[in-house]
Image 1: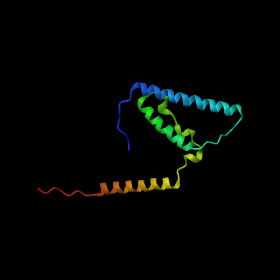
Image 2: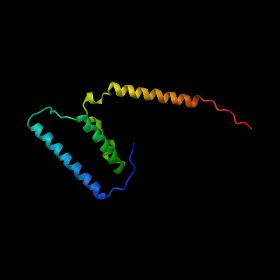
Image 3: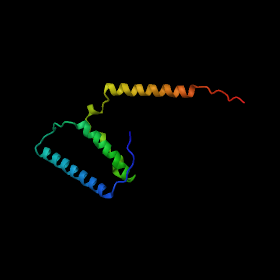
Image 4: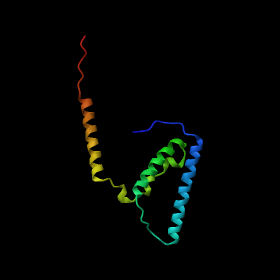
Length: 119
């Protein structure tokens, strides 16, 4: 369910930019620190959820940025690990069921014969 559009003051967009900049700086510092410590991996809880949050953030920022903005071409899923990209059996089943329902609805809609109008 999508939310209705609402006017957002430019000051709030500036605040968004500041928040994202602080997050970027913190992530870059963490990478630098881990590399300095010669760590190859770090245990992080909620990584898949982080990627979903990034995707949601990207969708919103795409709406307020221009069509030539690099955010339009970002592959947010690139931060996911391979096993995060795999669909769960439940999700795959649900998508297959939806496809079947859509196909059945399409067939029912186009398969109906129309009665000629009586004069």
